[in-house]
Amino acid sequence: MINNNDIIKKLETVIKNRKSSDADNSYVVSLFSKGRKKISQKIGEEAVELALAGVADDKNEAIAESADVIFHMMVLWADMGITADDVYNELARREGVSGIDEKNSREP
Image (cartoon, rainbow, N blue to C red; front, side, top):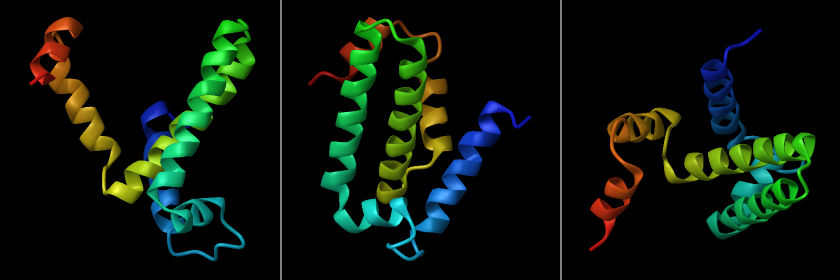
């Protein structure tokens, strides 16, 4: 079985490689061709579906929608030149910092 970090890295590679594929055969390419606004919209749609699954207390649907959110988020990352390691580094930077303190540090 592949470990959790490996699946994220594998998906990251697949998404990057699909950028140059045929749009007729790749959902990823079709998203890239529609632009960042559409990719971002898909993240929002999937996040709403995840929230609704949470409200409905539907664990299986929450798992499926979580995967959809992560997938579309990773497409956005690829479009913006962000890697999983960039995000991991940010999470590591926040380790041990109160969520309230971290949020307050970002306010102007």
